[in-house]
Amino acid sequence: MPGPIDASAIKARVDLLELIGADTRLKRVALTRGGEYAGACPFCGGRDRLRVQPAHRRWWCRGCCGGPRWQDAIGYLQRRDGVDFIEACRRLGASDGELDRRQRPGPGVRAQQHTDVPHLVEDLEPTCAWRKTGLAFVEEAEETLWSRAGQRAHAYLRGRGLEEDTLRAWRIGFQPDANRRDPAERWGLVAHTPAGRPAWVRIPRGIVIPWLLDGRLWQLKVRTNHVEPKYLAVSGGHPCLYAADTLVAGEPAVLAEGEFDTMLLWQAAGDLLGTATLGSCSRRLSRDALEYLSGCSEVLVAYDADSDGDRGAEQVCRVLPHARRLRPPLGNDVSHFQQLGGGVRDWLQHELAQAERMSAPSPERLQPN
Ligand SMILES: [Zn+2]
Image 1: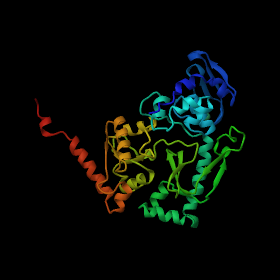
Image 2: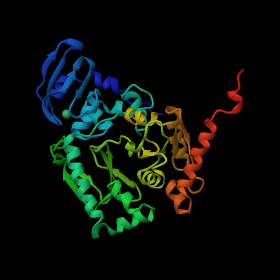
Image 3: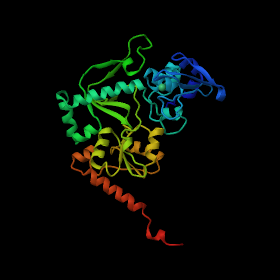
Image 4: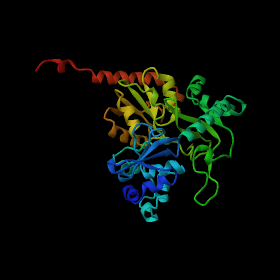
């Protein structure tokens, strides 16, 4: 098996002051912790909101990074250039030999190296510019879904069992242009490729699924009508945890494999439990996702009833001790179960009641020794 990329070796060779200093003017503001530098944020502006601690090889923007969440050089490049982890490593001078050690990116490999915490992937917030453009795009797509141009997409969604109120609540939309490409600059990404050609953000024709969390846009997924890949994400976004704002601390939750199943679960049983998805059964949890889910009393992992689903559920259960695998009684996923006439609400109600019975103290245990 090819080994993971040694991200710390790549980061150790990068001069963070030089890298970020090329995009904004940095001034030394503290001598502690090996020196701290401040400047305007290349992503969201301001005067001194961006902080760089070169000795620790880390940076943070209090405007757009959320919480005090330090990031590294790779994260900086990913965000500035709108590229993936591997490409960011390459742009930071990683040799082909270093990158070839892992030809096929496997879920979690990056996380282990990148955040030094096993089983977690990193949370990288989209830029303010990306969010602004993304929100305008969501509005436009919503309007299209409910217009003539969106009729077929609309019928497809209804065919999946999603009601109109559900589609509106989750702000589902439609992008009708088969070859839409926006200048990358409009999405807050660098305007040119390294070769000097204009850079584009390509958005396929399809159903638009916005990942909104606490009113902020994290990711944009498009369900195309291609066989493979069926789902594409608009570059520059980040999958945090879809529908995480339905989770309530101390209450149970169900984790689905994809967004449509999540919406279906929410529609059928949103008043009984929280519903969320990582967007795929192979995606690992991030710190934020873990935080959201660990507050729940129980997490039912309703991934598809296949070997990928089993593997994904196993990963989740390893990190979350109060999670358990849940297979639909019929069909291979939640949507299929419903199409076959299964009652999603009854099924979940039954599962929750069973869990309650299991956790209730038995009479014997109540007896004194
Ligand atoms: Zn910022």
